[in-house]
Image 1 (spheres, helix red, strand yellow):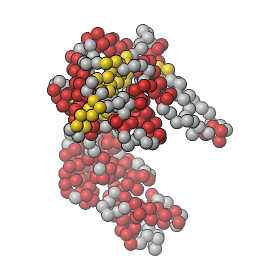
Image 2: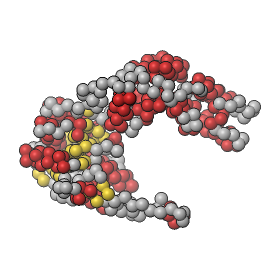
Image 3: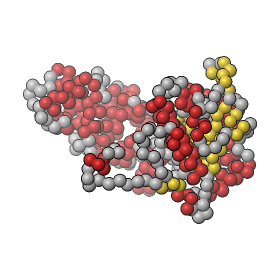
Image 4: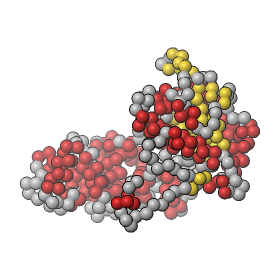
Length: 405
């Protein structure tokens, strides 16, 4: 990528310098982190927060806290969330980002429930992440775009008893015989090219694609639900089809196949909510009073937060055993990957970011002393000793910042 403009004379560079999301203090903490933990040949990011030029200018807020125990750390965060919500910050505009669900989530759940703060925990693998869900989405992709080569490969490879070896042999036969990959799903097959297991797998996929022929992305779920259900049932069994139908029952029947594809293809639930809102408006259906997203504090993994943002972000557990963690520590490349995850997490915050760690933690029932993460020394400020969460004046300051965004 760095040598692209040298290899292609007509190409040019376009530098991204303006940060539209983060306030200056938040951005500064993230950039100082990456100044110390980056690849040797990395092109440095030279970002400037646009809030420096806003009227009035807005600095944002970054707090760095250290606690005697992990339980007290999480209790302070739960109490802070309760206070923010009580003062008018929408719960969904608060995000807790964690690097290790197994180590951190049980205590977070315990303390948030004790503080009566409603939260949305990190999502486990859903139906749509499994084989049946991915197969269903591939069907919708082919209906909307018959030239979607990847969707055809998914249909071929997700069928039971069809593995990568079979799929690769089919692809090699296509290349060696100068065929078009997409056409082998629709046109008559040349004799002698595909045999045995490859021919059986291909014929099963061809039958599915033949059923989809003539369907359109403008068709509605009502029109195509039964046909899709039969394909899923024939491939994965009746229970999978029933589960698929139950999940679709919450969507309008007049949603189009193209809209359904985009909804299931969305990167996160906020994108899904925007798509669903557009569908409701098109169909002139009343928008639910509670909207399409639960009014709860979002607890998410650092990986899952990419592309999202919140007014206030808490990042707990900045201990060496948690981040970078014991598995990453021996490998410099993985340590830098952990730093990038922390960078992404910090830059999810628009108004305020609160970074925390603790001196002790219970590990497998045993009291364990903790050391601060190596990243804690490079976050543009020192960590102050705390025994409680946000004070009233800090909550008011955050509210002032949010009002200027």
